[in-house]
Amino acid sequence: MTIVVTGGAGFIGSNFVLDWLQFRDEPVVNVDKLTYAGNLGNLISLKDDHRHIFVRGDISDTALISRLLSEHLPRVIVNFAAESHVDRSIQGPGDFIDTNVVGTFRLLETARSFWTSLPDAQKSGFRFLHVSTDEVFGSLSHDAAPFDETSRYEPNSPYSASKAASDHLVRAYHHTYGLPVLTTNCSNNYGPYHFPEKLIPLCIHNALAGKPLPIYGDGQQIRDWLYVKDHCSAIMRVVDDGVVGETYNIGGWNEMANLEVVKSLCRILDELKPRSDGRSFAEQITFVKDRPGHDRRYAINAHKIENELGWRPTETFQSGLRKTIQWFLDNQAWVDDVTSGGYLRWIEKQYGSGLDR
Ligand code: NAD
Ligand code: DAU
Image (cartoon, rainbow, N blue to C red):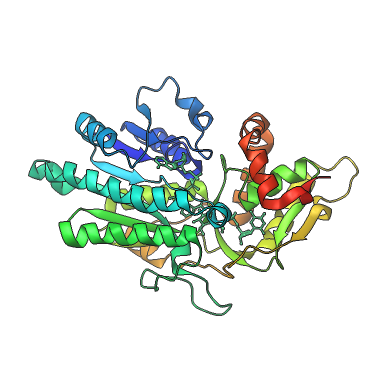
């Protein structure tokens, strides 16, 4: 038995591959294009593990994916591969359409052709799990009920629109061709190997570098935070027992305004790695221009996966955040590696020189 993971050198994908091989003895073929967000350094602990087969490649490359499927005969494909950063999608949506829409379409086509060719026994056990986001549902007002699996799709950014399109394609491949698909829509993740363009790792990195912690607009936008390892365990539950054709919302019941997230992060850093002048890292908080079309609130109702599949998150926001900060403190070499070169050009483009001190 083997599974194929796409995008397994990114933030969530690499955590998933590491956890899968820690808890199960089933090999993983990991296909990743290694964009700026992909990093083989995340998987260094697997370098002598013959159960991890890494292939640099694009999900759009039908010939490559087709060959890998025939060679390894996976029982499951878990599709993490995507462009994932909302701000980058605003600055340049093209890559998001190429990978998230066209790439997912090509991967579905390749998977369908492989699945059709399987003998009946393998055919019925095959699963295509598509990893998606709560952002496809758009923005909630302050007192609206959290998103559930029946919430309307109302994507507002090029990123969320591209993910919504991919979700629709996945759904259509089930309804039209019978491909045994599963879709998960998860809230904001955080944890080890989180690329420091996203709020939490960016603020940990900037705090330690003595730079401003940029808060968009008034900082009152709400996200629902989930520790990445809890997302990975949820995906494993869906792979194992998810009902074909169904979607599952995944979230941590941790709604929090961005400003409060960054203040919590500063309080933990003040304790674990106090500033040399004895002042709080919170003094580095700086309000900057808002993100265009910034969604005000996301919140996930995770009752379906909890009640039907018995999944529960293990970390609270405070315990997960503490683990995350400790991980970044212990892994400065990883941070130094990913914050050189192209990263600096992105920070300059997104924030101008306003973050230099
Ligand atoms: P990421 O940007 O850290 O990693 C994406 C990975 O995909 C990278 O390793 C990249 O090299 C690879 N990739 C990109 N284009 C590819 C292509 N055409 N072919 C093969 N590989 C390609 O993203 P992430 O935060 O780990 O997110 C993974 C998935 O989870 C995405 O689909 C995202 O939409 C979804 N998601 C993310 C979050 C979150 O909070 N980060 C929450 C919910 C859902
Ligand atoms: O909700 C799930 C989504 O969470 C995933 O689908 C995306 O792939 C993932 O990137 C994440 O999207 P967000 O846009 O919510 O994450 P980000 O870390 O970029 O921003 C979190 C919040 O913090 C958001 O309201 C914008 C704000 N923010 C972000 C940055 C980078 C700031 O205030 N300042 C910043 O510098």
